[in-house]
Figure 1 (spheres, chains in turn cyan, orange):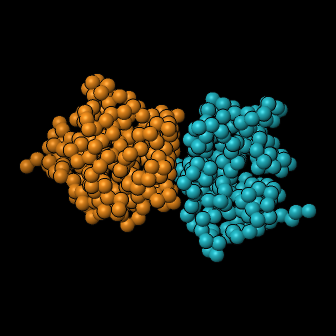
Figure 2: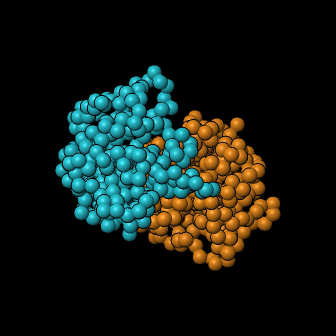
Figure 3: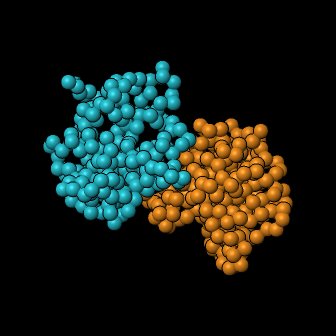
Length: 223
Length: 268
């Protein structure tokens, strides 16, 4: 399977590139750094830049939605919202045009953090983003991804990760394992192809649906 | 108390027909700050209605004010919001792949953020109810669809960007203390039905331009809402009952005066 991984210049995207590179053919993109054999920087809001990235791939792993590049300047918040929403929209639109049938969209468990700690919060609970751009970004990416799944053109597996590299959040090993499992979910023939899973390595949020079919996620042992 | 019985109101997107009809309904009761990307006088001077019978804006004189504001620029939005008692956001861009996100989503964020920064509680936001998007999860073949039904915009650029803007407004209402009243529309007509012949039929979600404007007056004056984010169908009642304006009448006291009966009844 050939993959495009976004956000590869950020910690999560880089971890997924390393992990999924074992077993998959990967093409990488981010917003910074020089072009290399596998890596090409691109603004995901630019259809002309995205089209060649998705050409010939079987699936897109959209990690930039979890871990966007930090922005500065007076309009940083507005730019972040635009990157999260329009970037996801253009990426998935161009992927569909290229015949890609599956996307893995990485979002944040922080969307559920506003609930009291003693609540058993699973995927059926409504996200509670804070009224600021950094929190709204992954939520808006989720909403965009869900509508692509609703329109029937793209199967989207949304994985909510906790802070990367933390046992209270999501370890790199668990992130890679969950993304790999998500890529293995078989496409349904038709209909609403949207899946949502909480993937954590510990902490307050349980695995709930992630450990069952179709993701079959198991927490990975860390040496 | 969020109800705004009098005072100063800023309308973002006042150059469009919904903004124009809102200003017409509010100008004798409130001091208005009319803002748009283009000068209101310039739009008025062109004299090109968006559709046959659609209202044009009027560049109101003192005590009102007209101001050029780019809703995608937070500094401009914040400056326009200062000193206001309520904000109305009727900005919209439909087909442009970049500006649709900038105006419909980022613009909504800027208006909500400015409201919080200025201590303004009541915001009236607007958007479309796309009655038929030709995907299996739209509500085209449903009836008694409630105002609060989750929108399923699909990937239609206009529908999804306005939907995302509405979600941003909801988050600000629920988490930042705003009271956002959202009006949904679909099809507009002059109150007399325009040039359409008797018995020629009418859209299932239709509102007269005149009733559209009056809804804003009701929205501003209405008492505190049951929830910080309330959505209303602003439409005429129809015999099929597909979409009902009953919630707007119950909570806002707004009722459509134009019901277009001559259009949905066959000629005798």
